[in-house]
Amino acid sequence: KQEVTQIPAALSVPEGENLVLNCSFTDSAIYNLQWFRQDPGKGLTSLLLIQSSQREQTSGRLNASLDKSSGRSTLYIAASQPGDSATYLCADTGANSKLTFGKGITLSVRP
Amino acid sequence: DVKVTQSSRYLVKRTGEKVFLECVQDMDHENMFWYRQDPGLGLRLIYFSYDVKMKEKGDIPEGYSVSREKKERFSLILESASTNQTSMYLCASGTLGRDEQFFGPGTRLTVL
Image 1 (cartoon, each protein chain N blue to C red):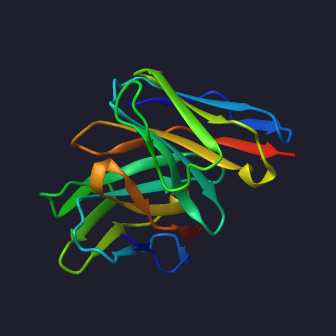
Image 2 (cartoon, helix red, strand yellow):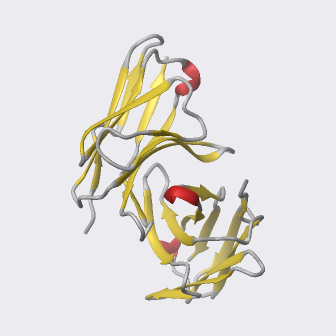
């Protein structure tokens, strides 16, 4: 059964810093990989989807990459801002479109 | 933009009540999902559906049932609510093949 790990559980950085959020998988047979953002008490917002034939996706200051051989994905945030403070979750799409989620990394960007 | 709506943001019910949580999506997606999210446990899949009148159990279906009579609407039913079903409930939808899921705003359910 696929297990998704996100370490550390929380991260605090000063504004302007470039940062990398990590996500690892026990089963390297990853199909698609999706990164989400969740603000407190709210639903999940889809940030980036890396499909099975792709290795990375970019949207604005965000870049996500996927290395299937090592079972790892990273989300790179450039020039972080206080508005980036949220919980970031990664999820693997397994059989039948079912997502397996990590528990998330809570990011705090200090002004 | 894809829009997934849920009938309530907050809901308070009593133990033993039958509870209906409604989810509607406006993008003609085939797939719809119900999750619950709890501190320390993350998101867990309760039920999902690939098409009208089709349903599949997820990882934690006990105590829940679902209904999908129309493509755009997926309902989660708590037959007899219990305190351990106090949680945040999240609905999602997505297309076959692309597998990207889009989430609603969530329903915070409290069972007293």
